[in-house]
Image (cartoon, rainbow over all chains, first blue to last red; front, side, top):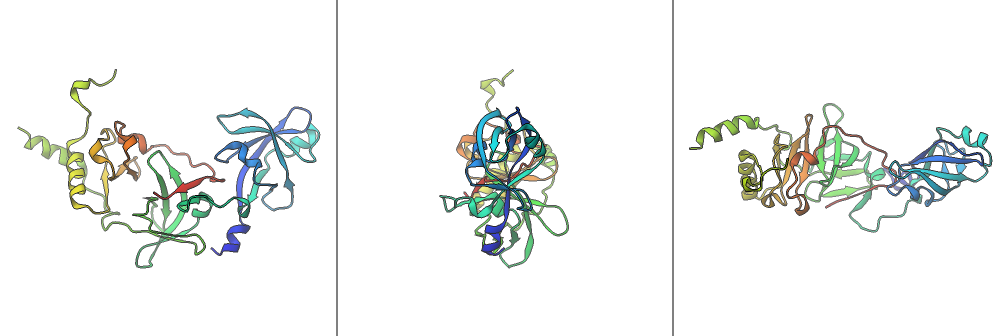
Length: 194
Length: 92
């Protein structure tokens, strides 16, 4: 993925849920890590870049779900606000600030990268990055077959080349092997116990 | 009711064996297990376990603040992937 393509990409930041009140305010579902940050990256656009929306946050409708009440430039009555229901709000990837930590990466940059092994053989494409409380995990899906999950650590992912559109994975030799079921091992242990 | 303290934390014996073998080998490996019920012990810190969630083995890199929790807590069986937006991942 060339650098210019990275900066021109759009990143989905939220969506308009509907109107709020009669003065043209709208309810916005924010997907940002901090919901209010949706308004901090400059004007938002629709997926085709035909319209731009300047958002100002005026309140919170549901903090737990990241639903905010916002005012948009040029939207002054409820009818205009209702017409925006369902509009997805994007920001140019180039508007997001560079991460302060060199080991931090935007999920939007990681998703879509090709994954190669040390020998240069393509293993698949990163389709999602999740965190269940034990570190970030990359879900890599090959062209055919089931996907696999790799911990996002230097040991398993020694090379991350966002500009080159690739990551290099260092997987142990037995990574794709499924061990024998442990119930048999447990039975053996029980037999061995006095 | 909470588990009696005198019993100590529950860990499947075979998992302890696997962890000891992995630590001894010093290789970069994933210890695959179905034992979601086992408690994370201090001697597991630094090891990477692959905890089965019913579909696949999810890697769990054990850190100090995970001690006392169960492996299953870090490998959810029902998952929802939200939008990435401005979220970041950190390479440890």
